Image: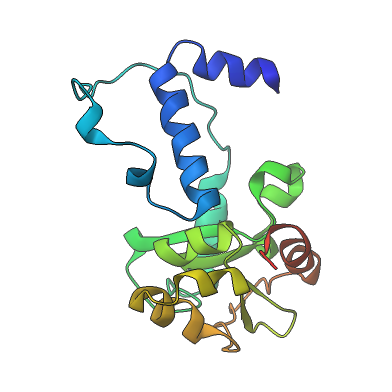
Length: 182
């Protein structure tokens, strides 16, 4: 893993700086501006692009199509029906799945973009009764109306179940034990 990280950042230290600042900001629950004083910068760096080799997820399109169909093109939490805003979200993250788990529709929820990200970061999970459980870590952000309405208010509510491929308790338990912020 060290070699992969070195290869990614050795040719682009600005990316390393950005990623490190973002991680620190997230850990300390403070905005990036509290770590970077823009008034001390002599020049703001120019944005640019570079070519990069990336790893693509094979059969992710299959996974997405099956979840869109199973959930009737509807977010299982908010009932949003805008396909461009819906994510085929893995309950057990892709990065730790074996090959068959990665495309197993029982390892998926159809979520809108916001709830997909919050689910991935463990700010909420679901239990085996398909009720939403919100992390106590979200209490830090409760002065934010958006967090109160879009996350905290969901606690205890049931998700919309898919017509086919009910999420597996095995994947739900993994998310609860490993991803969810207790």
